[in-house]
Length: 505
Ligand code: FRU
Image (cartoon, rainbow, N blue to C red; front, side, top):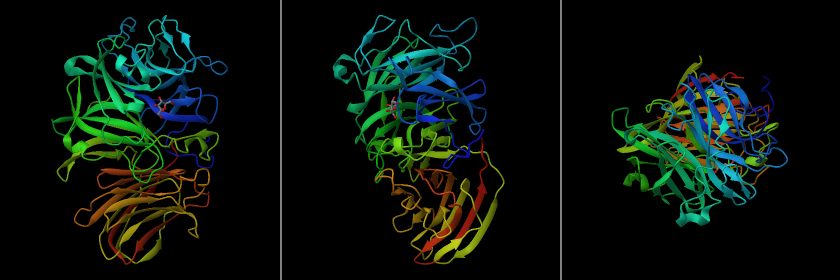
C-alpha cells in the first residue's frame, strides 16, 4: 500500500481516502481487533455518515475492510446516517440474532434521520431526529444486518427530555455481569447528561438512571462510555466514565476534548468519587484527542482506548489529501494511585523496535543538535532539575529551526508542554497554532517524557502516563532534524532513548 503522501501518518490508522471521525464499535473478537469509525464514503469532509471498518491482528498493522454500515440511500437520497456507537459479542444469544451455534456480534449506534419518515418497523421519525438502533453480524464482524423489524430500539429520549430528540446519541453498550444485564450509556448532548439504560436482550431498553452535568460543561457531551478498571492492578475495581466535550476542551485548546470521571457503578447508577468531581479530569491535555473509545471483548485488566486525533474546530480543513483525520495510537489504560489520588494512566501500544540510548551528564544552555533525523520517532527522555528553567526536545525541525515542534518541561510551574506555533502549515484556521500544557509534578526533581512523533502528529506522555498531550502538526518535508534545548542554564543527568518507527503500511 502506498502511504507516502505528504503528512500521511506512518504508524497511525488513516483510511486510504475520505473523511473519518470518531472510532466506533471497537471490539476484540476471535483474535482480531476491529476498528469501525465514522466515515464519509463520498468525500473528505463530514457527511453521509457510515461505519468504515479496519481490522488488525496486533493494533499496529491494519487491513482496510469494506464499509460495514453505509448511509442508507447513499449517495443521492440519504434517509439514515449511522452515527457513533459501540459493539459487543452477544455470546449467550440474548438478542436471538444467533444462528445455530453461531453467536452474533451486535452493534448499537445512533440513527440520524435527515428527513421525516415512517420506517419499515412502523415507527415514525421527525426530520433530524436521533434514535438508537442495532445491527448484528453472524460472520464475526465483517458484514452487518440492520434490525429493520424493530429499529430504532430507542426511538426517543424519555418524556421529560422529549425536546432533546435531536441531541440524543452515541450509545456505549456493555455487559454487566453481576446484574446479568446489558447497559447502554447514551448522551443528552445539549443537557450535558448521560442516560443509563439496561436491557436483557439489546432490543427492549429501560431507563435506569442519569449522570451529569458535572465538571467540564463548556460544550455538548458526546460519545460516552463506561468501563471497569482495577486500581493498582489489584482486586479492587473502579468504574471510569469517559465523555467527549465539544467545544470546551482543555485549557488553551480551541475545541473538542475528552474528560473522565472515576467512581462506582452498581448496574444501575454511576456515582463519581468526590475527588473526581473536584476539578475536570482531562484524558488528554492537547487539542487533538476526541471521542475516545475502548475495546470490548478484552479482559477488564486490558482496557485499550483509541481516539479521533482531530478537533471539530478545524478538522474539516486540515491540509491532508485524499484522506482527512487519523486515529490516536492505541493506549492501554490503567488506574494508579499517584500522590494519594487515583489517576487514569495511559501507555501507548507500540511494538518495541531496536533503538539507541544516549546519556549526557550535562547539556549546556541553548540548543544541542541530536544525531536523530526523521519524522516517525519514538523517544523517551529523562532529565533532572538543574539550573535551567525549561528543558526539552525539538522534533521535525528544519535546519534553520524556522519550523519546529517543541516539547518540553517548565521546571517553575512543573508543567509539560507542546508548542506547535512554528510547526509548519497552520494558516487553515486561526486557532490552530498554540502551546498546550499539562501539570506533571517531578519525582525528586526527575522528569520522564515519551514522545511519539509521526508525519502529522505528536503524542506526548508524561511521567508514567498520568498526563498526555496530543497535537497534529503539518511540517514541511525538510523538517526532519531533532535538538535538545535548555533555557537559562544547563540541564543535568539526561537519558535519551530513541528509535525510528517504521511504516506499518
Ligand atoms: C462526535 C459526533 C457524535 C456523532 C458523530 C457524527 O464527534 O458528533 O456525537 O455521533 O460525531 O459523525
